[in-house]
Length: 96
Image (cartoon, rainbow, N blue to C red; front, top):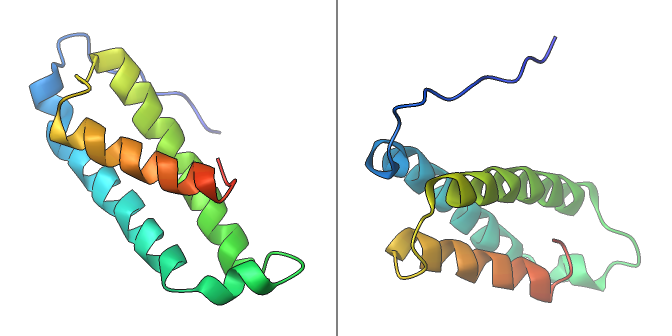
């Protein structure tokens, strides 16, 4: 039932920037949510809220990585820096 959609061949980086921005804002919200719940780190097992957050982060980061590589988002671009910051956060807590 899940068909992979093909992207139109004529899309440019400028065309997809608004969509990338939405995903970047979403991943930043996930960082804030995780950061405001340090008690999650104290559990021997991950709670459901944290497991759900990890799944969301992995999905969003996967999409962002795909778009970044397909459209060659420059490393100096603001969105690229924000994505890297979020990725670093979740790598430090061993989630991605």
